[in-house]
Length: 151
Image 1 (cartoon, rainbow, N blue to C red):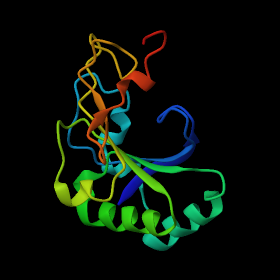
Image 2: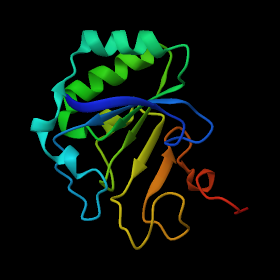
Image 3: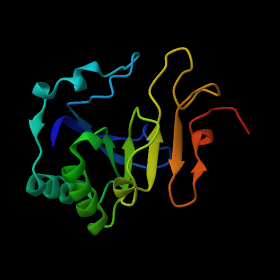
Image 4: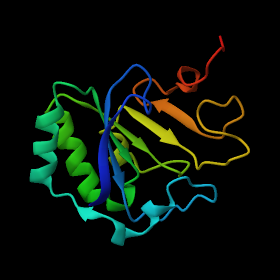
């Protein structure tokens, strides 16, 4: 799997600290994508399983989630990394511009953000968004966590 970078974030999942991996080679190519540099697989570097494990060990006392920004196109590698993360007691999230993903990936996820970004509709913070943050265990939509001043 090739990634552009990784970073700690408190923005991607409200009330959680996530270690986010920006995966390159995206073939979804949402029209209003704010990360078009992730489309080009040549922009990334190979993240092997050993180094991934070391990164998780380094940050495991600080994070609650591992969040992949894409990567479902590297299905086998993604699944192996999700398993490694679970073995270390972490939760997993995947952001995708697709409307759904394969069940064999979902089984290792706690949260799944679905839907391509459409500028006029806004992101998860918008009441008009086409995107959904789904808690897979319950099937509940968690968009309300991103929306300010709503009940």
